[in-house]
Image (spheres, each protein chain N blue to C red):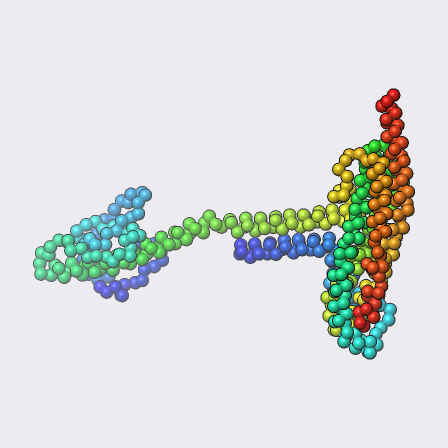
Length: 204
Length: 204
């Protein structure tokens, strides 16, 4: 009885830990369903066209090779994607740090905070879309494509669509670059003025 | 009286011992007062007529020793006395063996109860500890990934933040150039281009 209780408690705790980890890693998609089959079903519902028998047969014959290509692509791109996310994150952190320190030095940071807020919103969108992209890619690699060629086709279409969206998100972030440069330049001038005023005040 | 006609020793304490049937004349056994901290003594080799026989358990090291028939009993007074003495010794020996078995069983039960007693609370304690550890792991995962998301979307705590409390105008100029360079180095088409997931590339 005591051994059973211990086993139940341990398994329950492990399950809770795994669930929390997966939810916050984004591996469990609430929008499309918790399992691969549920997400594939949702994508099939979104797919506008239906496959004819010839297309299905061709997909069944070639989908395994396509999954290998996708897997290699994922491994090849992984480093570049991680590098991109890291750079976005560092820019956001650096700007936040500047805002905090400039405010501490009594420098007006309204413009810089406005640009930073926009940057964070666009970065959040990119992060969300990247999570969906990863999910679609993993589903396309892991699913039984021969058993469900329509589902595989729908997943591929979703993958192509989300990759296009990610390009748009990246360009959106890059479009803030002129505003960022201008805001930092204005902050630099304001900071220099504030410091010279302080120096004049001290000398007087 | 043959030993095989006797009833088998029971698991209950010595009160279940029944006197051997038959016309064995034995003097009444006088109970001996035990000392509080020493094991009850048992001397199987002494004839009942000659000494006070203990009716409690023998020491453990004497249990497995075959009872020896002491040759130092009283000399026979008649022709039948040696035969009677041998018979009484045999019956005493059987009786003693039975007592040894019962006493050994009682000791085993007592030891088992002693071992099990203190351990009854340990499995519950282990189960509680396992539950607490699992919950702590879940909470740690929750806060870890929440902090990761905040950092990704522009958290204030990051390894790239400056250690100094103030910021200089040169820092803002340098940061502006760095941000420009980092964003320009990112190749959106290479990371998320449509050609990598086209049907031609996948062989479909």
